[in-house]
Length: 55
Image (cartoon, rainbow, N blue to C red; front, side):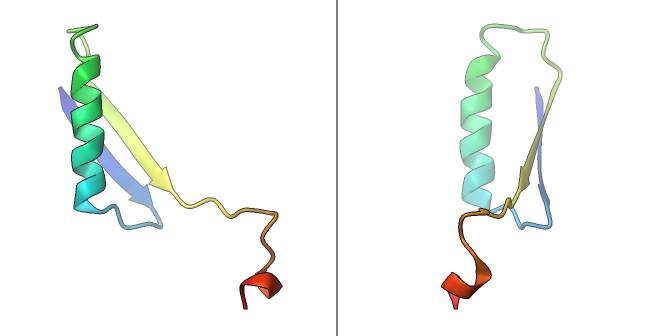
């Protein structure tokens, strides 16, 4: 199974890639026909946190 982990405007740490790989290899035991899995990581802003509160 080919696992592709990519980030959208975010750098993906190696430990996260390893964690995702370990979890998704467990899925393979349920369906051996899986060829490729794409995982996309992106940062989503929390609308409850204003920029003024962060300063």
